[in-house]
Image 1 (spheres, rainbow over the protein chains, first blue to last red):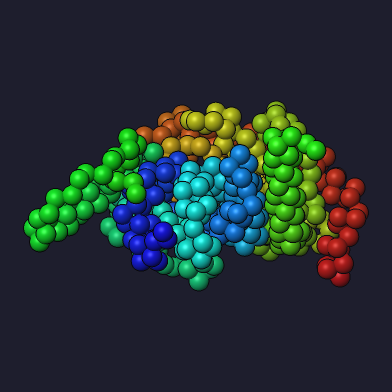
Image 2 (cartoon, rainbow over the protein chains, first blue to last red):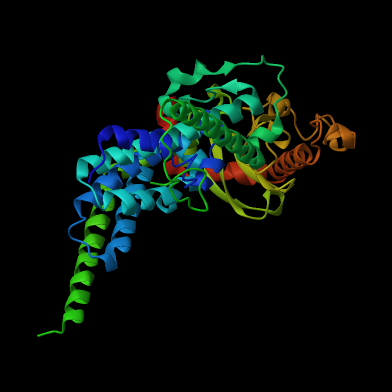
Length: 238
Length: 221
């Protein structure tokens, strides 16, 4: 049974968010989230690859047998990533240089193969592409939030260097939130800062979820059996 | 007739082969379509980087057309590109690339622009792995520190004062990071020494490369 578009969107953006719940693709999530522009660049690239790969995998799901399914998926994902890499090199050369190895590494981002296998191989093309888009946007939103918080704490700015992505007119988008004297909270830009901020984001999401659940329980007291939990997960996989 | 298992293996192999052809084909098409633009973008980025270390009016050639390959212990013992600046066909300066091997975490690559009078026209850090927030103030994006090099030469300050303040030199260090600026200052100093020792030889190469300097002469007329 295919889930509705609404369910797919809620799943990708919140309930089953790749960054906050599935904790997939942590390496680029933590590695490129030290500024908003890097985060946005990688988020867009990942979302694009994820949408295209989900659509492509869904299209060929009738052709491939189980034995060669994964190699075929990996080939599609690698080819799409290479195309995105070439396009970024052609149109946003400086951002490409900053993101460096993280672009080709999109190929190995578990969320992409994960969605290909868990969703796209079982559902229609339109729904799969939409799932890829929503998962990608969900991932990108977490990435950008993380990038913005780390940039704000670490450098005291927001939206610095946006011209790398949007051309020269974006150079003055930079906002100095704490004034030019701000010394910067170094830890936030360093790798441990990424873990700390991500931890806080996950905690915040869980608090919101618990509140929503408590409210729902108050309205309808019928208890449901607890669904199974997987180990490396901060929520419920469905 | 092939047995069932072989048939399915053959089928799978064929499918995978088809996938390989299709995906490689896709990549090839995109590669063909973007190759030219990527080359232009890379070249533009390089020109922008080079233009930062020599003042705009001081040369009229395409720096990338007058590239040299240099290898010297003073520059870091690796083959590195250098670019000759010409004005009216005459050498007016040079851009050297140098490596500071003694950064806090790995080598620091710097671009050093030197005018024909031996004075520094500009210094930029190309790549480094220094600590964010401490050592990365060598980047112009983070701090104006590198601008202190402009106008300095081998004689000004003298040998004894070519260092960071902690070493009785004239250049600032950063609070909490002395190793990084010290490494950069030393690398720039060595690049100046190299230029001083090889100036005539380097500039002679400009005259020896008529194809490269020809466009500059045409424009001068």
